[in-house]
Image 1 (cartoon, rainbow, N blue to C red):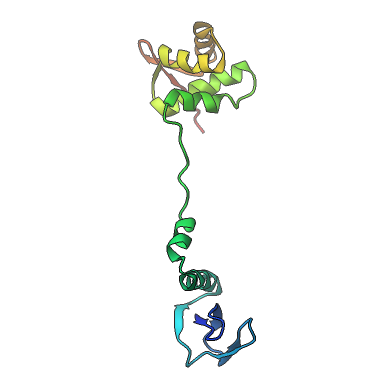
Image 2 (image 1 turned 120 degrees about the vertical axis):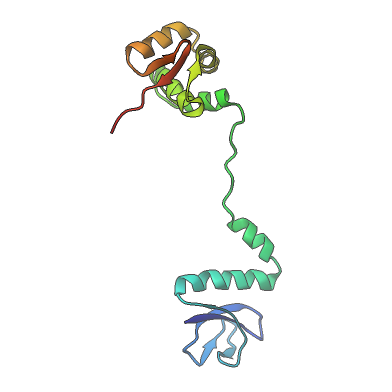
Length: 158
């Protein structure tokens, strides 16, 4: 069993094993463990690290800031679907790979996409011959046409 005690001289948090009678602070003061006020009790040393950090932040008056920093950041996502797909497809290699990546990402985002959707994305990639690109995708079995005028990427079976 481990705990967090606060040094009465320098007011720093310190992690200790509760089975010990005393511990020495980094300022040199010897702290008796049992009569001291134990601010947190934890079971493992890994939990003790976080408990000491939390106690130190609380003593410094920045516990809310510490907890805010610990929260995972939300990824900023591009609002427009077409711009998001174009940004992902732009990372692919040559022209054929960019067209294929655009079709796959459009299917991931929209399930089925139209020629107009593909035209917007390919024009953002600098590819102007949309009909030829769509024919290449259909011939290579990358996409299929579940309904008239709408396309979907073929998902590979593992």
